View: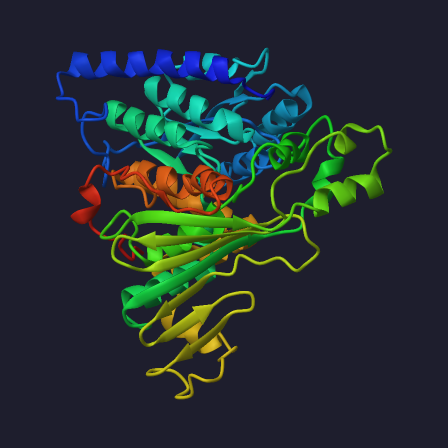
Length: 453
């Protein structure tokens, strides 16, 4: 998909906002302050015997989603949209090669996705496009009567985050950001341990997305680097916060008993991208014409209303091993990832001055029931160790059984908001920036995410 300019987005947003208001007026539901009808916290919808799915964007991430849905019972793949004919054809072929009916294909123009949304035989839309398209496509999809799964980040501005929330509340449709890391085996196990009080009262968390991706700068016409590289010349902050932050937020019951209060952010010098461009491209190449302003390492600190602290880091530039960090500290001890290790005052080895690196006994005792049930199948189907498949499987399960999804639009909004708020903080000498309460106070009484089987 081509970049969406600001004027186009505003026009689109105004249109869908008007459509959403019309829907609310027709139903006669009272309007909440801020534009919604009623909260979608814990939203349960009518059971779907079959979940009929449409895909928008089937390049790097989207094609994996198509593959996974081909292996989930109770799914019909109805339509696929992408403006790049090669990847569109590839995705359609994946479906038919599995012996499934051929889905309709849409790809003529940047707004071909609206033709897909006009269909009345789609329940769920999966959006895996460049970031600038996430919010307008998700909003359009909800207004058209579809549930939405949108890739990370769901929004790139606070205004976009509010638009997602308002639209979900008006339409009473699910809008789940596809934060797959929440479905990793380790993250699920730690969530189970937290719920059982193994670490005591929670105090502090640490999260990161540290992943050297300079090589993506060589993707010029297509693939992720063709559009993602430009963000490093556009914004200076944490450009991609949710992979590490999602699991930590669930440990801490963010939006369900606690919420983000404010954030402060600092960035290192921005040196690595320009150096890589000088080394790998001719002097006159477009990659050498960009002014890379995003600090190679961004560190943001979040304070929650209940007083907890969370450190979130972003670095896709420097040469170092991959890490999502994933640390949770409580009054009884700590879990830290990459590599996995645990130290407890009570209930562990008895020596909290040394790490326990052997996870086997912890898995045996605390593996999440969902992983015990579906872990083998998730690993067989793949996707970052199985977390991608398990996320989609769980989504379909909830829709078919009339259960609330594990992640909702409030998670999508608050986790994504770290991006723009970190930019604002960096640009303001790291002064703190307040998080909106996207739940409009519902976080105070919302139930924590349950340990489901």
